[in-house]
Length: 333
Image 1 (cartoon, one colour):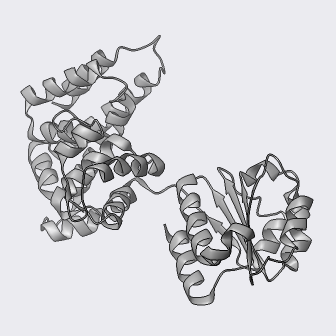
Image 2 (cartoon, rainbow, N blue to C red; image 1 turned 180 degrees about the horizontal axis):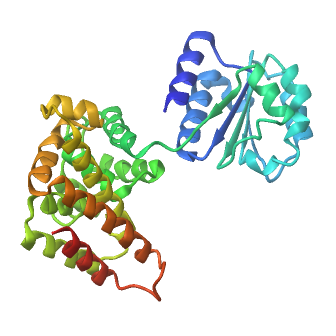
């Protein structure tokens, strides 16, 4: 997200750079950066004649350089975009001479997804000298709720923390998937509207009652009946509720409960700041800490790690998700 922000601010203040080399594992953010540069680097009325889109699988570095060195048609600038540029990894060093002396009237963008350049390579050093390299890494898990909130805000919607958490627990950290699912709501939710669990259940398919968010809440409260209803639903819908995702979310929760126990000041604002969480969820941690002493939490974290190995087939001939879910609940409660 920081790299995207840097590109926007720099382009708005200083205008477009002659070269943008966008690389890294987070393809969604690379696409967002490309889209922003495309819209703001060249006059829209002249873009039809001066925008060239190439694909790394289909072109050579020499062909890219040849096109980049051409002059724009009836404009002061042209844009050359190379998608799937990672397919040029073996020959990308041939770009060094052009990087050292780029065509001023060309904005050359490389979308180099899922990989990063070797920092020892001449091309990386050349690009770095001109501040052309932007690396897009996946967001940390605790950064995703903020991303969801920002997407909602960009669409003019309101979203409550618990709804954000529901989306996060179901969709994980795949930013492209999160974006695509929220796009569905544009058909039914006007600007100024609120994303509710009911809307999510109807249009995205996440049950507002049976999800990891509710399982975590029920475990924190030691609500045995609700816990059993949820894991039965999980067993009947394994593709929607992968065991490994459930374990990951519960491991994170009980880790936070352990951290809560270690804090001397349990003021909600202090807890939220120290643990880096939304204040809305401090109450859940307080309940969890009250129901699970530190020694018990330590044992639960050990059992979760053990079950994680079982779920991945370590030391077992296979596994039954229902059995593992029941074992998890037994170990926790």
